[in-house]
Amino acid sequence: DTGVSQDPRHKITKRGQNVTFRCDPISEHNRLYWYRQTLGQGPEFLTYFQNEAQLEKSRLLSDRFSAERPKGSFSTLEIQRTEQGDSAMYLCASSPNGEETQYFGPGTRLLVL
Amino acid sequence: DQQVKQNSPSLSVQEGRISILNCDYTNSMFDYFLWYKKYPAEGPTFLISISSIKDKNEDGRFTVFLNKSAKHLSLHIVPSQPGDSAVYFCATLGYGQNFVFGPGTRLSVLP
Image (cartoon, each protein chain N blue to C red):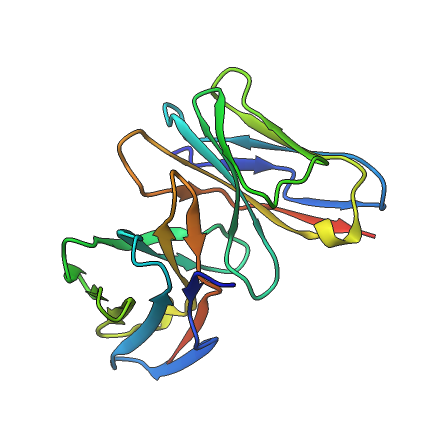
């Protein structure tokens, strides 16, 4: 059973550096989501892809953040010029068309020093 | 301004008893609700959902109740088991595919 996988699981970086995270959804899941979760909070929606098209973006997604899903399979989330406030767990989820249930990956924990 | 609220950050229940987790939402346009469970170092796992056309949905030991007039839903776990100890998130489908999650309630089931 290959669930949603995310890489890396942990990332420590210095302020100002760029980081990129990868998400591999469950195969044949058309929908892919990125969330950010900080301590004591629930996941906050960042962006949503339907196949390769990025259809929704949260206002939380500043211009330092960019996400891609070039072939409608895996996705990457890049944060440029990281700030300490970017420290969080970044979660990826996928779901098939017609189903609202999301299947989450284990997340990438980012620490910006 | 939180659109989905879970006012109890934590809850402790004795094994075998009922656990009741509560969730309130602000927007009456929300019409689909989900509960997720999260263990440490793992992503959230879907538990149960309910559409606004229903007021109750049951799956084994888990039942979700929806009170639309009060904009309130609750998750009942009966009987509670130690393996149910986790953080529980209430979520709703907002606009488009924008899912909105509550802050979570940490459930501890004591043996």
